[in-house]
Image 1 (tube, rainbow, N blue to C red):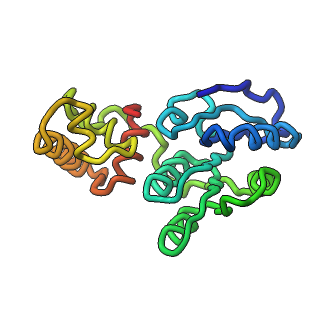
Image 2 (cartoon, rainbow, N blue to C red; image 1 turned 45 degrees about the vertical axis):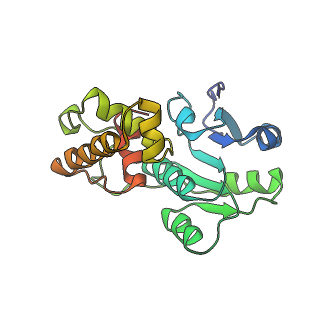
Length: 209
């Protein structure tokens, strides 16, 4: 994970990116060559990016594998108010859902310059009047136990329930119970978290990721 300098001029757009080692260098160079952009943070994993001071910035660039985690990350970035550009071979239902979030999707074989051109053109997500801020007031955060918080943090980073149990050193049913209680507590305060994508958003909103 790297945090970069914040721009001192309003003429630039700040960008935070998630990309593996094979792609991050070319994307970093292309962003550096574009005077209207400044890279504020980069990481190889989304969970590491969201805790940086540079997240979300004006645009979040997700150069990740196609799959449900990518959709969850796009939703989290959009919920934070950023424009989203995804570079992944997304097709069918996944592509439709990414575009419904407002993400611009480019294929894996797109060049770094093509990706950056879309970053320049991407429109920032506009909140509806009266929409909640990304971080809810303390009184709208559920009281999670240590185990529940740990289970949520692991699950929100893309682990399966079995993997959560392994990481925590507990049984599968215990991990499943932790996650069920987390969902129930969020539902009780009218902040639905029935799906993984919703849990990721809640974890990011409440500083658990």
